[in-house]
Length: 328
Image 1 (cartoon, rainbow, N blue to C red):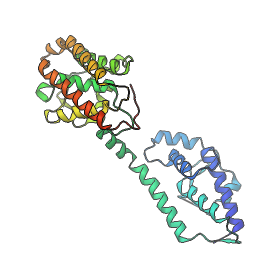
Image 2: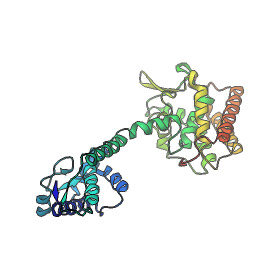
Image 3: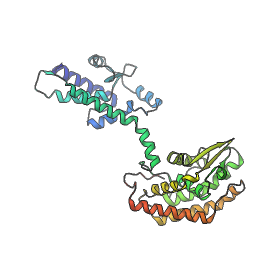
Image 4: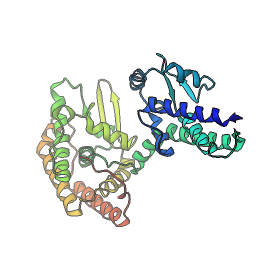
């Protein structure tokens, strides 16, 4: 129980600390709770958190005295004479704002109000804790906010064109400093780059990223497709392939993801695939010299037909088109 004057002073102090912590006055409750991620998101990098804490202003002595009755988790000592307030503090502000409107000299915060606030705090923290898991699941299932980068799609298709569906037919990426490294990477990325340019209309990434070992194209594809895109080590080499058992699933995933691009038509996709095949064959000698060229024109035509058919079916179903962000 608090005297109304005490509750009013506490509300003023918490609101003051909120402004010091976030640089803005108390506003919409949901929007304010989202602001708390700045300090309380479990996915925030330690370096970022240290920098943000260092930017906090010192808490005035009078304000620190007024909030002395409160401790963690409502008010946190951030070090260097700086206090900060988070989820629990913002929920207490909401309770006090509602209670001081009551025409009474004393304020009693009911157990039900406390329980409701605790449930809200738990829901907020739970959503932050599972955010990374949800993001990974969405990426792997093709429901992520962003479509797969076109260059990564091209890399996957180039591997499928080459029929790299097992360790014995993998594209082997040797040490990046070896003379064969650039030749092998260019055989895959020449087709991938041509595909991406048709799809997006823009030039590709830097040469340093056009490599199978540590390059962006493969890394992005693995984020979406692992373990359907295998990257295995053998001695000092890295084997890149799509296991035969996952081939149809990967084609379907790629087609569904491409169908999320609103400006992409079946005709344009067909042109992009054809350009990929032409560019790949122009550089396939680089793979042949290393006994890694396994492409067969008949199988490439079957792959093309499967991709276009799955794309058309996904577009008819409208799978994943809403809310997606189109990248390069």
